[in-house]
Image (cartoon, rainbow, N blue to C red; front, side):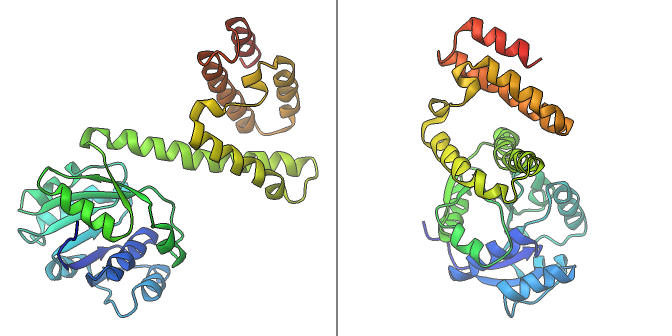
Length: 288
């Protein structure tokens, strides 16, 4: 699935935009310009896209066959609508965005003036450094486009060494919620666990958690609910009760996370037959 060589403009020089721009440039596309406002963005553009001009969005649109919007989700709609109202889109142009929450509907003001919309979202966290280019290899990208343009979106992802996975327009929010739940909440519970260990005097909590969490994540991705383990999955009510007692010394948010996730784990364990209904009832009572 080889896409034709394109003149591609990037709006903006955030972590995602600069990395994807560099990946597209490495695959043979010509980067026509990038939009950068802050000094950090300008430095990032200089590092990953040396020699590429920093331009305003209207000029990028004028010069480009494909424009990639890599702006925050809440900014995208208003920005596209404003550029469309100003007459800056070019009929026949390809316009893509990287917002996980949206499909192509958010680009409708541009579609109304004759562009072809694509939604391409990499399921990865970005540092904005060159090491991200290596991480793109086999990274899944959610792609959403109509039947005619879908092969173009898929080809662009393959050229960035990613793996395109088609997500329907109506499923984009669910897709994005799943990724946020996995990635962001993993970060939160890791930080909470590290804080608990520091409270009892563990100086380097990451060293204590690293092997356990790495193995647990790998097992969960390989085996799903079959990897359930720990006191809740074993129905060890006394241990759970003791945990809750110890957690009184920690912030309320940590208590809430432990209780909520333990309830979810208990329900999954019961559904798999790992604990009895009576044990499930007892656990849920303890976790109230």
